[in-house]
Amino acid sequence: MTEVTRDFTHNLPKAELHVHIEGTLEPELKLKLAQKNNIDIGQKTIAEVEENLKYDDLASFLAVYYPAMEVLVHEEDFYELAMAYLKKAAKNNVRHAEIFFDPQAHTSRGVKFETVINGLYRATVDARALNIDARLIMCFLRDLSRESARKILLEALPYKDKFIGVGLDSDEHNNPPMKFFNQFCTAQEHGLHVTAHADVDQVNSLEHIRELLEVIGVERIDHGTNIVEDPDLVEFAAKQGVGFTSCPLSNDFIASDMKGKEVLELLAKGVKVSIHSDDPAYFGGYIGDNYYALAQKYDLTKEQIVALAKNSFAASWISEQQKAFYLAELDEYLANN
Image (cartoon, rainbow, N blue to C red; front, side):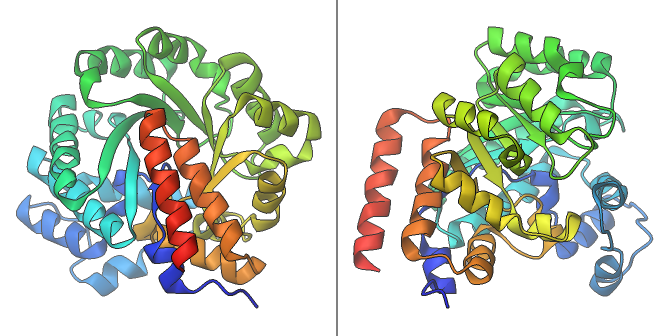
């Protein structure tokens, strides 16, 4: 039985590199914003909102996920959403966060890009008072057209001082990474970091991972544990220092498996794999809960947990000086716990 306790995983210094800010919309805040903005969401109580949270694959999850965002209308709504997450992150001792946001899900319903980015960015600035360094990553919705991605990137570039990179998420079926090759190239030309989802157990998962690694040249892959099916790709990812962000609780919902064996295999082979929360309001736990669930199910040691946390900083988009500071903090934490 693992020696890792819930307190150990929650108090562990860590970086959060895979969390969708829209996926942190808790039922209480959803109802509050719906009432404030006079939006009929068809649910009047927290119990009714929770009853709606039923899904067993990526498509059924997204069918619940996107309609919930309609309550986000004003800059202050996005600020409140982000601050609510960042306060929870502080309780999980997240020291650095790189937060996904999906602007197309908002601009497509008439919310201005500047409304979204200004609200979220203001929260990342105020998060300094919580002792969290927070940044933003703008994601393309892969089930929309490449033209839509092109337009949102052009709209976003004047605000690139407020986000650090681009990502790729949403329904992967029939939407391979190469669909957005030009957008990734443009982002890289403008000095932005790049990451992309390769969701677990999808059609052509391994081929999509290969595109991301060998052609697009992403710095991180979100999920991506299907890579273990190809030892050559695993070796390549390790040599390139590519990070992999795994989310045990959401994996358990969508794939009926936490993918812990794959995570441990990647860890043993020197790949920068780390643990994160994905959409915590929908999958039953924030980042500390994800670490704890993985430790419990796969009997992880404290040293393995700390190694995963070290990878979260190593794969982050911060300076080497910041990384060194956080890694020293982790060494001290292990020594004292």
